[in-house]
Length: 95
Image 1 (tube, one colour):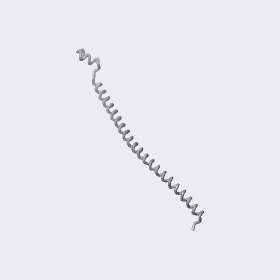
Image 2 (tube, helix red, strand yellow):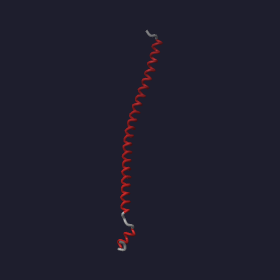
Image 3 (cartoon, one colour):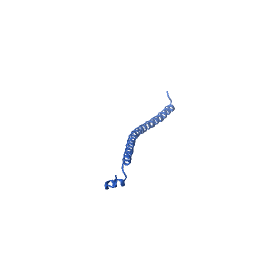
Image 4 (tube, one colour):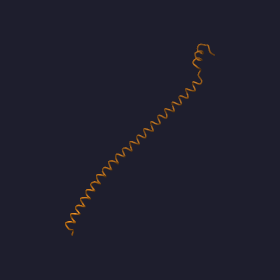
């Protein structure tokens, strides 16, 4: 049979272990909350990456269209007469 001193020591050990278990449960709860927050942040990051890729594609297409239009304008201007030649042509002074 256990002595009164051994019983008291066992109660103290049980109290310490119970306190440690309670702290572990609190920490586990906090870790679960942090895990949930990390999941939300991951989802936001994925969403932001999709938005960034969409914006990047929009700008790339826009610049491609601008370059295409600029080349078309350059080609049209190569085949055009100067303003003086156009005015002379209208006035009948040119060929």
